[in-house]
Image (cartoon, rainbow, N blue to C red; front, side):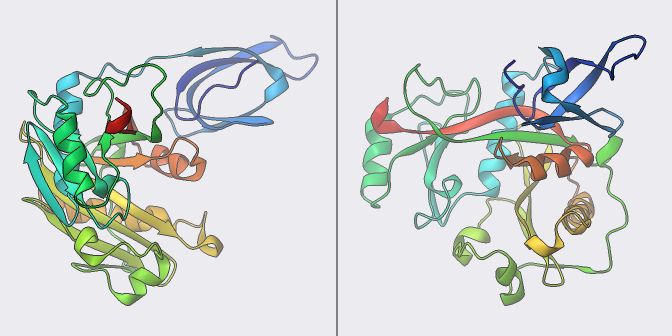
Length: 301
């Protein structure tokens, strides 16, 4: 049986040990890991591990319906939170350039309802900067024809900052928050993203969290067209020796408190579907899948 995709919400039926009555049972939750064993996290944050050969049936359960307008508003706020070192609005698209560092900072994203792909203009804009003309293609906002290659698919997870499971707790005193990424922050995040890309934000505020020399993250608060104040979490890194000891959650919760102080009511994060550890962290914090996005080269459309 084909394993369910990581991040999906499923109802999974599986066999219990021989002699059990009843012989089968079910679990409902989000898929955190797959392989020889399947890890399901329930809405109560309980982990259920099922051996893959014991799975009898899997049914994908649709998430609570998300309206296209909600995707557009969130993507608009996220674009303002990561606009690259240079940006320009053209025909409803935000064109971003960030010295080629990260796909997010070097791609065009639709931010207005009337956005239509002016492919020649986008191709020319990126061509003059020596960059491939990447389009961010969120669910329902950009239609990618079947057979056109895509790259960098990610799951966008969201949560409520002031209510529910994502309500911030008192931040750890071990977490420092600064307005710029200092040398110690960069020692943990060694991707070398330029300062003018990391610190860029449009009509918002950005901060950098660090716990000693083991964990870092970036937070940005921006406002969507519908008025929602969003906190975006990104650049979350934990050194290998410090993983699974709460450092990643501590810096994220510190940024949640920082964002709440700046009137953020929602939080989002973008995660690669195969990053099981990150998905587990954000699911445990109460975030839930909202939509998916990917990148496509405009020259292929």
